[in-house]
Image (cartoon, one colour):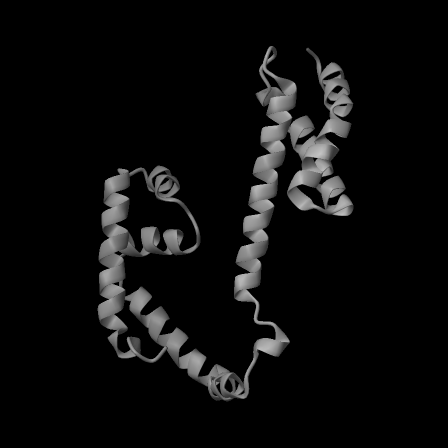
Length: 170
């Protein structure tokens, strides 16, 4: 099956996808957005579809996963955002006393502690901190994944010991 035939079959499923999307979102506009995201992913990942597979089931799975991922993203974002009405006067006092001058000293101490790590520990630790997965660090440094985990663990222990003064300040 070529891409044009596939796209035609996918588009034919759009009405049933809209009905399925309304079950998730309970809102017509959100349902349309979810259908659009699903169709876009289906067309983008057309090569992952195996001919003979249930197309409708494949599309429903894409839609369900897209909805779940979007929901998790919204929940995670909302958990970090403090709404205006949630800020009490007690919280305003706390936030007003923590200024950037104090943060500058903390960052200097963290950078000093990082600079004291040997390169064997510094590189995996900072890569992990930047969001790389263990296997990505392992591949990049060409070392076993167990070694990566050990080096990150040791670096954490050294950093905790070095930054012990901040243990109870936050």
